[in-house]
Length: 130
Image (cartoon, rainbow, N blue to C red):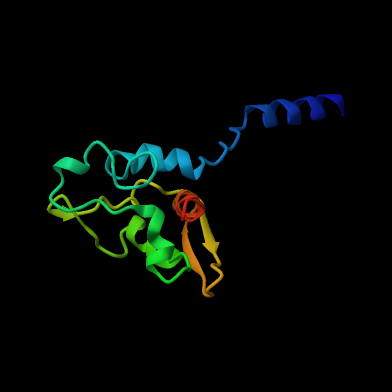
C-alpha cells in the first residue's frame, strides 16, 4: 500500500501545474498599451505614427450611454468585428489571446463566449471607465 501511495504521489508531482491566469491589466500592457497607452487613453508611443486616431478606451461606457459595451469590446479585441488601425485592421487578438473558453454575462443581458484572456482584458477595460 505504501508503494502505491508513493507511486501516486510521485506521479502527481510530475504533472504540470496549470498556470495562474494572467490579469487583464498585464494583458493590456503586453498587447494594447503600445497604441492605447498604459492608461488606455489613446496616448501610446505608436499613436503618433498611426493613420487613424487611437481611441481613449476609458470613455467607452460614456459613449454607449453609460453601460459598458462588453459584447462590442470583446468582438473588436477577438476580431469578430474589424476595426481600422494604421491603414489596416486592428490586430486580431483572438488568435493569440486564447486559452480556456468562458462565458461572460453582462448586466445588459445575453452571453458572450470568449477566451479567458480576452474576458480578463475586457473586464479590466470595464474597470477603468470614467
